[in-house]
Length: 563
Image 1 (cartoon, helix red, strand yellow):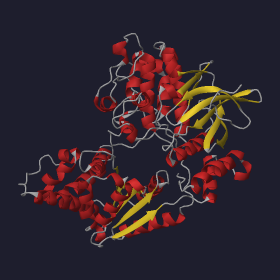
Image 2 (image 1 turned 45 degrees about the vertical axis):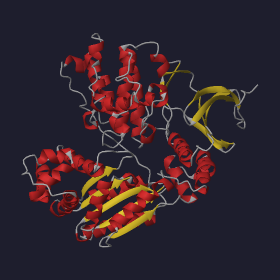
Image 3 (image 1 turned 135 degrees about the vertical axis):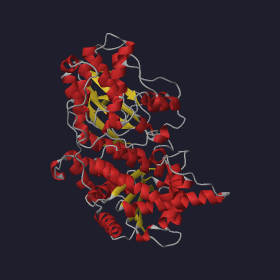
Image 4 (image 1 turned 90 degrees about the horizontal axis):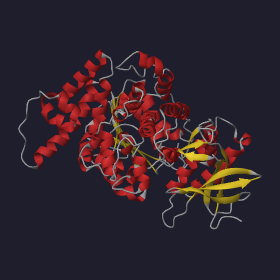
């Protein structure tokens, strides 16, 4: 007899619930004598959104293009009662969370798990996939000891963390990197997964998480600032080199971690040799960094042409503002990455940042852009570091004492600048806005053409908006391109209008606006083919099912298909 309340999925006998998450339920089911796991999006009245449907479709597309022993295989996708489901391999065994709840694992078992998980991460990182939610609950261990990573496409967003104290969020935050939490102004890339892996291995090895708290914000701050207790300090008998590898994975700065899972794999396989070399252990000598095979841009030819047109104008000293708007997942960031990539061959100075929802510190995006540049300079050649430093100094001029208020990095660079008496009242703030804008414009004239990219301007603070307003009035005759992305949903319209009004207040500088609409079905099919390794649609039933049942339905409801 079927489980009471279970969905009626054609061709399957649903036996029971395997687990429940915030947005989905996983069922055990059989067909033709074989067992499967079926993941069904959970309907929540008035709360199930097109974004959740889109993320579910993205998870299907992500799993479909991956094939590795450390991952579950996707067999089928479909829809029941208006909700999508995925049919995957059923992994018999326990979650890693269940294993470590019984106590710490042995050194050898941790090494075995580390090798398996690192190989799986290395595989999907090389295909442009970042998990963003690696934790013991998302690792299944079968009866033979093989670990599989599950649950792609449901990584929590920053808004999920704000003041939250529920078990699911806290469970994620126990292992989540500082940049994933949003407190460290760094991109969330493969190295974030490696930090999460370090947290998982730490728990396996010591029997406890790296940091513990019942308050979400406290956990986030601890990941950003607190120093982990070395595993060997808790258990002196542990192999010291293994402890050092885990601490390297848990470095606060992504640049100080392993840059790719392959570097960790090499060190684990050569653990004995590394230990014989003595402390301090030399780790990461075979770190290969990030290797990404990225899907192509499809259905955006007109938008790409516009991007390259405004780029050419900036090179010709006709600065402008470019605004790319669209719903979440519509491909804004992917399109901008193409612009950034093209700039590198043109010797543009690229400044990138992201506005954060709920950020209380003013000028956050501009501070992030400048400090990221200064951080990159530390790794550049001495000649390039000297060139850019001189350009920054020239751009600041006699007002360096004012400009340095923008960021900690500039405070350090201009620490010897002569103090300037403040003006009265609002005049001082207005001067700051104006002079910071002039600083960026002059930088484009001394260091070379500048691309300033700000993601998610719907969350800009008022101070940054005022500086961009001043900047837009000055870049029309400078080699400068201000590129911004924004969501254009109903909640973002007020902020989006404020940005457009600010940068277009005098009409001195050209404003180009692009709105990304949902992809047409032929482009969706092309994208699905690319994600599935380039198989023509007629040769892939899975690609056809994804296109017709999932993505087409999302397109028809005006929910965009992103890249």
